[in-house]
Length: 141
Image (cartoon, rainbow, N blue to C red):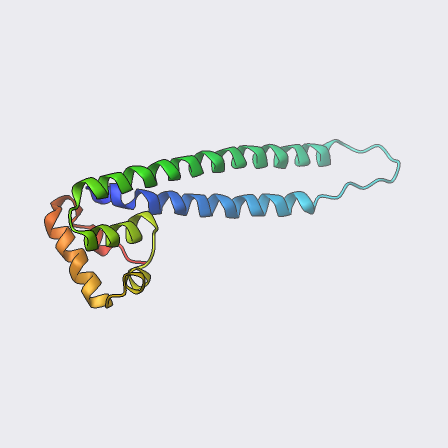
């Protein structure tokens, strides 16, 4: 397993969080647009702003749906790869919690009911087994 494969789920989750923040900002923008009804003719600027925001909302929601689908597929793919390539149950658990569930090292250690130091030893053991992941040890959260 490469570092890129291990971090693929985490990167997708970050993109989803960023897109959700963007959607929230768009929704706030849409809520703050108030047409003025005074009976006088006006340009269609308000309408076009509303249309632009509505289009951006629809596009962003589609992108969010696509990213969520990619996330589910990436999780399944990574989980399958971990279970096929790693034989030791403790290492499998560590990798699933850390890279599929995207938990911090501290939370992973707590869930596994081991010390953080022991978790780091297990992680280092995995890195030695998998030379393609030499930089994965630097990924912390």
